[in-house]
Length: 195
Image (tube, rainbow, N blue to C red; front, side, top):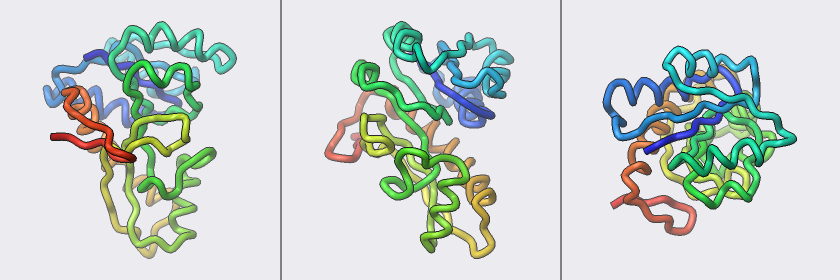
């Protein structure tokens, strides 16, 4: 199965996918492209060090630049990519995203990074955690593939909560790719189920 991974920043989620492929955990998958909205993203260096082709795209021509890549690959993974994918690209194949909250809580436009942690802490929630979901035209509202919980500590800051969420993001993103690549899933309402 061929993946395109879309990134904007440091690329720790990308690295978790690269490592899982190298370790043979998801050996049936290969990353065909890493695409970035940010020419300075460290994720591009991670890709280049692993011999993965990279591409930097411009927002004004996002559809034109992404469509040939979407047509070529079997699945698209948003790993910290901050732009909204146009509807015209969403229906050709699975597009999955990782988000640092337990959706449907603390999602939607403008909710990323420490903004999510700020909202979680302000709410008084005792648990948080990441979600991997299918991308639809409802921002952060697509069917949920996988989630993990962690305790919100009394001394957490938005930054510490995000830092503690990252390892769980890596785990469920890799596991979601593995399970989705087997193509044995159903979408039942707002959930993705596996046999």
